[in-house]
Each structure stands twice: as C-alpha cells, then as structure tokens.
Length: 182
Image 1 (cartoon, helix red, strand yellow):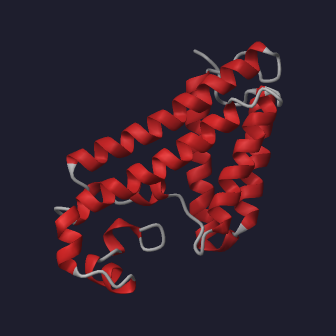
Image 2 (image 1 turned 180 degrees about the vertical axis):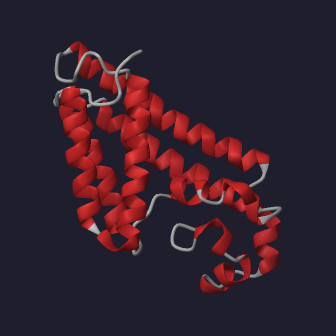
C-alpha cells in the first residue's frame, strides 16, 4: 500500500505476491478497507513507539531529539523501495476511504502532532526553540512539510527534498517564521 497507494493496491495481486489464498484473507478481514485499517494500525503503533522512545531520551536535549526525529523519518522513508509514508499515502486516497478508516487516519496524524508538539514545548522551556511559536501549530506545519517532502522525493527530487525539509524545519524552530501564536 505504501508503494501503490490505497487505490492502486488490489487484494488479488497482493495475495498472489505472498501466496495467500483469498479465502484465508477473508477469514481475517471483511474487506480491503478492514485490511487497510489493520495495516495502518500496525504501522502507526510501530512508529509511535519508536517516536516515544526517541522523545523520552533525556540524554539528548529536546531540540536534538526533534532533529533526530526528522532524520529518522527521512531515513525510514528513504530506506523504502519507494520513498513514502503510509499516512500520506492513505491521506491522498481520503475520498475513497470509508468513515472509520478516515477517522483512524485522523487519529494517527493527531497522535504524531501531539507527541511532536509536547517536545517542541519542552524545547521552548529550555530556550532551544523560539518561544513565540505555537507548539501544536508548529508540529502540524512540520508534519505537513515532511509529507510534502515525501511527495517531492517520490517525484524525482530524492534526498534533496528531505534536506530542504530539515533545513527549513531547523530554521523555523530557531526563528519561528510563520508559526507564531496569535
């Protein structure tokens, strides 16, 4: 689903690629959307655990943890056969997703944003990040920028898209450009 997107992934070809009969699939999943929900949950659980472990590493300053997170998400995306983020792949298919899967997707983005916002606030308290930034708004911007970098990387910019993302993210956190509290 990461490579082909939600709409481009057919259950038949997917099952054939792993030699699983359709009957076995439908024993566990009622539909493609049910399967997609399980895939999204597994992906989200893995990345939230990874994120929380990294964010809890008090051996690094809060800003260093944020920067390490940005490098980690870039690395994870770049290591895939096709650069990508499953959240973004599903987000591009929102019109064809059912209400439950759309809600699940909103929840995983919200959890990522909440975790990142808490770390940004901690970095502000330690004077590492511009104090006038709204942590939640800044976290949302960083996630949006990352998802855009993934699209640009897939479109042919490769690692340069992620380098621009990290450079802009660092500058924004330190100067607060465009994400101030109102």
